[in-house]
Image (cartoon, rainbow, N blue to C red):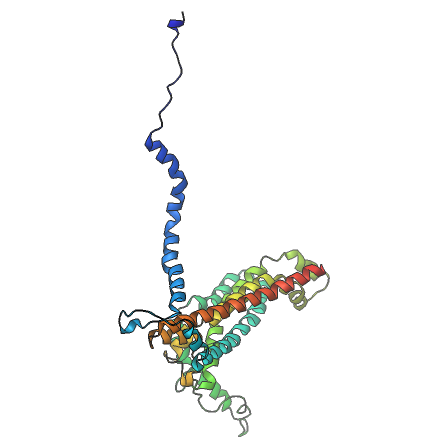
Length: 334
């Protein structure tokens, strides 16, 4: 009887090498798909950064041929920190950063509040108009403003002199405010101001979009309650909008610090790559470029880049500390 019993159990499948490899592939296949990003980042991001740090301690002139690097230690940093032209470029950079960066936020915040409260249907169109300078080519923007600020045929001089030469009863009442003759904007006393205005015009729309996006996350109930209590729009701006914008203000100011201290395209194009008369428009990044690719001193240029990096990192840390202390103080009061 037992001999006639037919077994119905299935035979156990043997695990082949193919099945083992397929089972293990589920672990490393995801890393294979994301590997192109890391490879590109290592080759074009991490390696150049580490190589520039290594190069900053050497003297190397590749323009003279593939010459060997010469170890000089901290000499490149000492030379950069004692170089008068580097000091002047740092002064120009900070001057233009303050002259262009501070007005960006002073204008962008109330402008974003005005757009947020006044425009409903046409908001996207208004935002596009203000955002257009940011996405426009920097070369095109700099060339256009170079033409506008031309001494002989620029529109800016035409408007200013037209107002300054207005005569009322034989008297020119606006002559003490506006010029009566064309201004040479390439002179040292005007160069930094002209570059700062171009940078301000280009980035004020970007900051406006940032603040506007943050305002759209503020609960409308706060404004409705304030309106019922009789608060005007000005009071709503100072007591509701500004306190709620502090996280975005920290982010936007950090971007302004990084971008303003790395400014290169605008002064380079406006001054034709020379820095202007008496180097009045040369920025620190522009000085680094000239040191590397015109003077051929890549070691000193690398040292300048790391000095500039430390300055940006310090200011960014200070900005973070400033806003974190404010937020901590407010939380303690609450």
